[in-house]
Length: 133
Image (cartoon, rainbow, N blue to C red; front, side, top):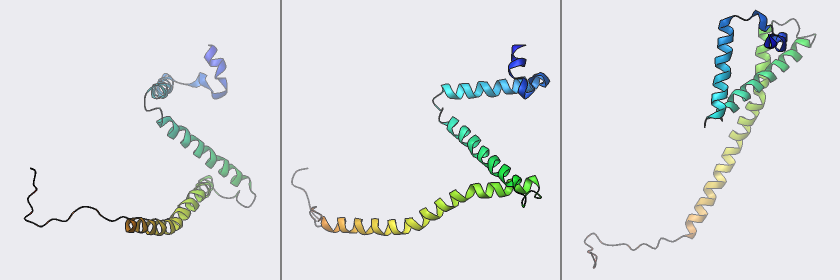
């Protein structure tokens, strides 16, 4: 009965036994993952939650604008996801443009370092027989 009081804000009293079982299994999997050596996977889980929370915030801001309020909920989610992908697109474009400059300078540096070294291995004829074998 205490759980019904604690979780009354999410309507726990209306949950079926299947919902209790599902959420119990989910909580067990999260705890087992936290105690295992693969706990880094929880970062992906929480990262996805933070990303979707940011999409929800952007969608909420868009739906509050009078000029965009006549859009359907689906369209505002699509626009919010597009806006959330803009930083990724800018980062990829930055890396793509920077990679050409970096790769040219790295290859020039490697050529300069290779020119400094002289190979010191002797060159032998095909019929060379080593003295000690």
